[in-house]
Amino acid sequence: MSIDRLLRVVPLRLRSLFRRSDVERELDEELEYHIEQQTADNIRRGMSPDDARAAAIRAIGGVAYRKEEVRDTRGTRWIEELAGDLRFALRSLGRARAFTATVVLTLALGIGANTAMFTLLRGTLLRGLPNHDGDRLVYLRQTAPGSQVHNVNFSVPEIGDIRAGSTTLAAIADYSSAVPTRSS
Image (cartoon, rainbow, N blue to C red):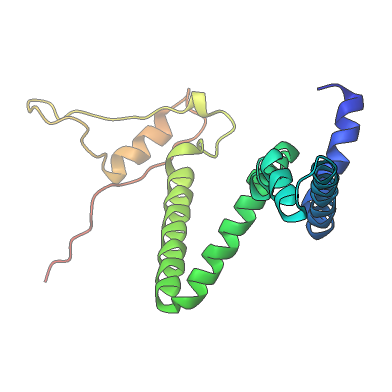
C-alpha cells in the first residue's frame, strides 16, 4: 500500500470506528438516494410507485445485504466485532457474579503461582553466581580411602588445614549439605 493511499484510508477507517453513527447515517442516506433514483426511473417506465420501489430494492440486492457489503469494504469489521464480543462477555460476566469471582480468583492464583515459581527458578537456576570470575571457582571434594564412598564432607579441621596450606587458591568458602540432628 502506497503512502498516499495509506494517508487517505487511515482517517476514513478511524472515522468509521469512532464516528460510527455518522457513518451509518450517511450510508443510509446514500442507499436511500440510490433507491429513490432507481424508483423514479422505474416509475418513468410505467411501474406503480410501490412496485417501482420494490424493484429498485431488488436491483441493488437488498438494503441489508448492501449495507453489510459496504461495512466489509471499510476494513474495520473485525474491530467492531471484537468490541461487540467484549461488551457481550462483560455483560455475561456481570450477570454471573459468582462465576466471575471464581474465574478472577483462579486467574489471580495461577498468575501469582507462575510468577513465584519463575522468580524462584530465576534466582536459583537461571541467574549466574554472584561472582565476577565464576569460571575460576573450584569445587573441592574427597573420597574415603578403602571404601566406594565419593564426595565425602570435609571436617572442620580439614578445611582449616586446606586454608592454611593452600598457595594457589585466593579464598576458600565452605558449606554443608548435612542436616543437623538433635540427640536427646
